[in-house]
Length: 120
Image (tube, rainbow, N blue to C red; front, side, top):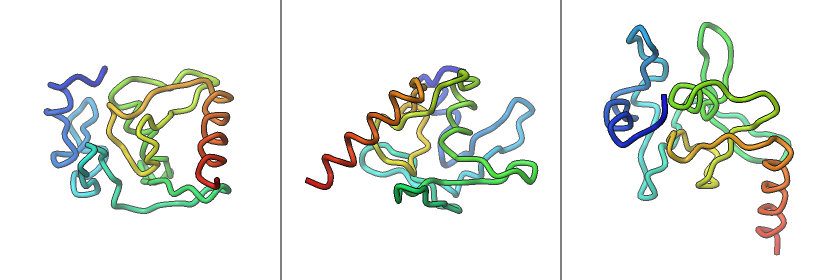
C-alpha cells in the first residue's frame, strides 16, 4: 500500500497500524507525532554499533525493527539488497512518508557521511 494522505489519515499513529484482517500491528499509543511530522516510537528500543537508537517491537514472538514494519505495512516488501532509509534522519521515526527503500550500500554511505558531518 502506497502512503497517501488518505491512507495516512486512515492509518494514523493514534489509531494504530492495521494489517489486512484488521488487527492492530502496532498499538497506536506507541507513537508520538512531533513538529516535523515524525511518528516517534515510544516503545522498546535498541542501540546499534554506531550508537543510533531504533524502535523494536515483537510480532508473533519475533523482534522486528519498527521502521521496517511500518515501511512494509504501507509500501510493501523491502526489495532484496535494500535498506529502509529515514528521509528525516530520525531513527525512531515510523512515519511511512519519511521512509524509503534504498540500495543497502548507498544507505550505509549516507549514514557514514552524516556521522562525519556531526563530528566536525
